[in-house]
Length: 218
Image (cartoon, rainbow, N blue to C red; front, side, top):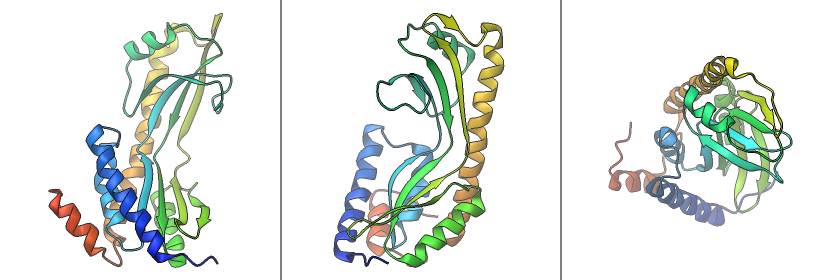
């Protein structure tokens, strides 16, 4: 097992902690995750890197998983309504119009091997069964991805043909929002478990900084 350089690891923890607040200030951070991210960072051996509570994305792409030659038509971290989808489906596209719904995902780093098992056990208990260790870096630590299997991909239209009839769009909207709710349930469960089990070793510096920022810790 790779030995983590604790001095560099601490440097990255401070960097990502400060970036969390910068992202919050500019509106980039998903506020629904703020308290959970703070709680995780309150442990001396954990820092969070990136996160999303769940989202709905309409993309102009060949396949729902395509990364190259893909245009985001619409994105929202929350429910949509019939008017949203009617406006979107009326737009001109080049490839295919897909709607993709994904559940919560959090990337974090730990500095001790024992924390890998700890966090994966927490994730699995919360229902985030697709979580795992994704990389090991001497300086950034053991990188873990917490992720549920919540997802939906549906083809709406091609450049010259509607695949989903407009009379069925209201039903589709309900299903899209229903999938997002399932992701929220897993996220709420994760919060409950993290609040019970984390922190194990308190990060005094992080806790004091959070208090200075006016955060009420629970």
